[in-house]
Image (cartoon, rainbow, N blue to C red; front, side, top):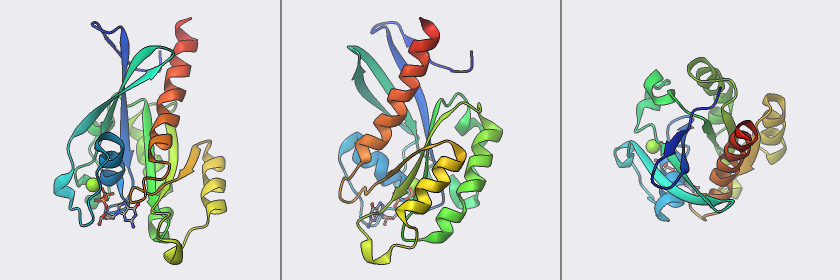
Length: 185
Ligand code: GDP
Ligand code: MG
């Protein structure tokens, strides 16, 4: 089976490993901080990055745990270790809508993801920092088109405004859950 999931014996629930990738400073750590703790760091450094954060959700009355991994600064070297990707069933590939260069890197991050993990990893393309309206360099349509070309989900977010953050993570978790449910029954 292509998908990896840990059965949690106590809750009969699922544990899904989800990775955050994308260039440095696109807002990966803040998306996770916002989603898991409803916090935001204005001048965050890679040092705030935790290894992973586990977030509980309920789907169909079942408890689902998303174990979300943050790169903790590894991406500054334009790559992260293969251990980071191991066992991942979901990915958020993030760029900053106010820095085109981070959007141009998406193809490289998708290649890296597919080199190190299963082709079926549920992936969403995330254009972060929509609050920076005046500095926008990548249009919503461009983001959408790239996502469509690669068969990815797509969402624009703001970790600062807390816009679409929960929705982006939930899109991935729900899709993984649906795929696994279909395969089990
Ligand atoms: P990472 O390197 O991808 O983990 O990025 P960080 O989460 O550390 O964020 C890098 C910088 O961008 C920090 O100064 C954050 O405060 C800022 N940042 C993150 N998300 C947003 C956002 O949605 N809007 C704005 N305006 N700034 C953000
Ligand atoms: Mg970070």
